[in-house]
Image (tube, rainbow, N blue to C red):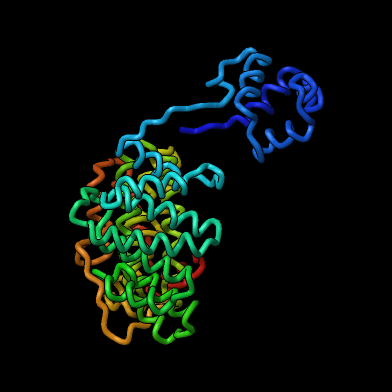
Length: 374
């Protein structure tokens, strides 16, 4: 149930062209009383509310702003979920959450959604009491995890959020302990590395975690880009594909060691070839040919001295071996050949064959051209 009589009095008074003094005189009350009603500091007596409804020719329900809300479990959960996406501090969300927890103290989804609400409100408002309450509820949610039916939530994700709450409370070691303990497949490496360097002044310990995270991110970048590209090309959204490729190709130069071959070049060459396809679909033939020349240059640069040692990438300092593996093809040039053949695009194929037959020059001159394009 929601009542908003103060806002309604202001709205109705102004709509009627009345001042606060005029309304006070019509009701036989003081100006100060009307001011308090409109500021929400006080509420009119019941008989005055009836007089207000008569004065404005409106029903009592409408004057009060009375709104009956569903109070079944599912409706309350959805309402609390919605509160986590608003920044209105006067929406009564916290009060409703506590009432809901009294009614459903051991229902996983209710406890979890209330925990999220306290978490975001604690972050937005810098309220440590809210963060502590979120921690309590998240811990309780872990005990109720057997009830969980959501695919996007598990104990790992809950523990990760608990770690964040500890960090917000300045309990960095507790947060790190949780992140390290619940770190399947290194999914928390970036967070661990950041907190070690930023909050704990332990940069030497942070670097290997950050390096692992960076290597994982380059792989994730590959999957994200190819996923989007396939979606955009199949939907014939070539402008979107071109914009994505501009972002994706800007990613590589900063990670490649200057003057050296890098394992990233193999995938980079393929993206230039796919960009040529997109350019052709956008009727940009000259730009497409330049893209194919870039694909060729980068592929030849890689094939001249192929490197699969991932630790050679800039910023990576693991202190242990890391090798890149792929199914792109035996060489970078063959990989480009295959990806172009897969497109079954006659003009693209013809253009690629023409670019391949252009004078290649020495590996040295190829590297010079690459340096100029960075």
